[in-house]
Image 1 (cartoon, rainbow, N blue to C red):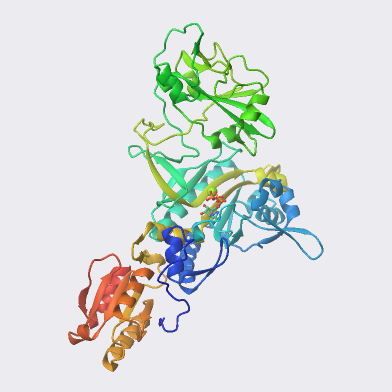
Image 2 (cartoon, protein in one colour):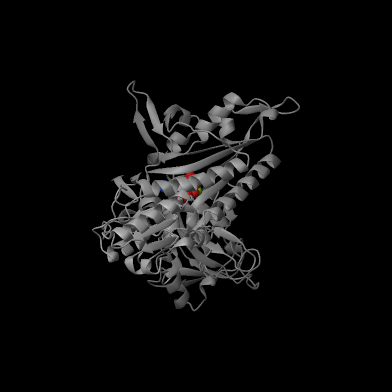
Length: 565
Ligand code: ATP
Ligand code: MG
């Protein structure tokens, strides 16, 4: 491609609202064009890169035995009502009406649609197992579209769905996808971590996320360098050292005027925070929940929300707390009535705790579980943090920020039951099909690649997904001999199958051309110039190399080949 003909211009500066490196560089390099918040048109360079990503995805999905389909984005809302997700999705679901006033949605994902299609085409165990996938645009009215392609409202996803007759079959389908995902990310030149992920309120089922480590990521991963344990913080557990058993002492009230926070109370009474209990109030679906956890730990709201199976969980306001007859800052689990108490398992690890006295300005010493207070549920609702002990081997956990680029999930029979996707097993019994779902954010992956691979000059494309492999810069092209040499190198490399972007502009300076080459970030830069030509040579430089080297004109192709494969 000759730059004089290519659609798209590079910009000196990115628009002010571009927050992250990938967003800034994709706009500056003319890769995409914004149409609305979180809605982008992919220009030729981005599209070439996205096609390379989806080619790799398709190859590996096909190799794993999946079959490609393409389902509609436009769907009747009624289909979503059958699974309850029309409401559950809330405002994220794009909804519209057709000309006959029928309610329609733009699909954020395709479980309903594919289950409907499979129901009509699968009837016997002989039709299973099955894995179907597509590469397609998804629509989600995200509350905070951000950072360009990282979180869009229309974005490209590869989504796959597996259908099996039994749980063992699902295990195999799931493992095949995990392996296919590893292959895909490795082949894209983008190593990811597979981490345990939150599996939502349904719970208990396997779910893994593929995380690309990068600063701009919204996810925090806790991982163990010793044994390899890795989990999203939403889900991560940890080992809590067991405190020595003490003799349980009698409860005693102490004045703690003005001391409402754990830190203040612990300091005032000269006890470690692990010797206190923290009361936190949450509300959901019009109910108040009293959550109690050891004072040195914090509540993981995702674990809590999964435990409560309630939607719209939020911290209760002081008013909501007072309405329940409790004193904010001094609330106590002791003697509490009419409120559901959820205790973190840490309340069983330790004794003689300091707790609120449910009286302004007072706390109680020597509270013990279950002697002095009970809980409706005792479970793990604590958030894991960097430095806490690994749940498997007790080594301190490390934290990494990253971007979720893929997600695999065992669904079970949630969709097949609600949509009636049944099959007859070998004994002629009717059963719901067991499903799994597997997503890759194709457009997010491009942005994530740039978040992970850039410097202060621009993008550093991993070779397998670069829009072109070679950036050929011609200098002083007003000279016929130089132009002829550059043109002929361009033709020859292109004929040999290299993908070459040829900066054939005559009016731009060397400085501008080099800056653009750095900004676009193709793996190899070649420079044809009067000086290099005197030695019948071309300057070759990898994007991350400090300086280039001269290579004989005739050896250029071989050298480039070694650099891009
Ligand atoms: P997130 O937690 O980032 O909102 P999700 O868990 O809702 O993502 P899934 O429903 O698991 O996403 O979708 C599969 C994949 O699609 C994700 O792993 C991610 O790579 C991609 N993806 C999800 N939402 C978006 C979005 N708004 N923009 C771009 N890619 C997205
Ligand atoms: Mg996800």
